[in-house]
Length: 93
Image (cartoon, rainbow, N blue to C red; front, side, top):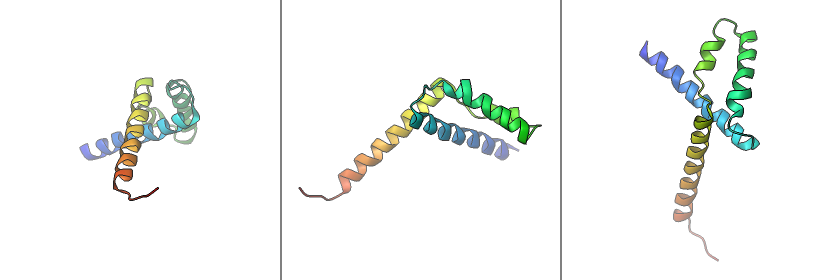
């Protein structure tokens, strides 16, 4: 029971990061997640999977703060990876 709940929560968090990345790439306001994306997903899922759409949507955190935090974490990971890569790569001028 706990494993399946945990897995669903992890999936919601992963989707939040994926959607946050799309929001960052689009250059749109972080609030678009709550204002447009979640309502759109809910409408689509109601049509495709009528009985559990709201349960699925509730597991995807897309508040302005969550999107901002996700984008910041991804950018820090990229910066850290790039710094590590450049420090270990041999090059000459």
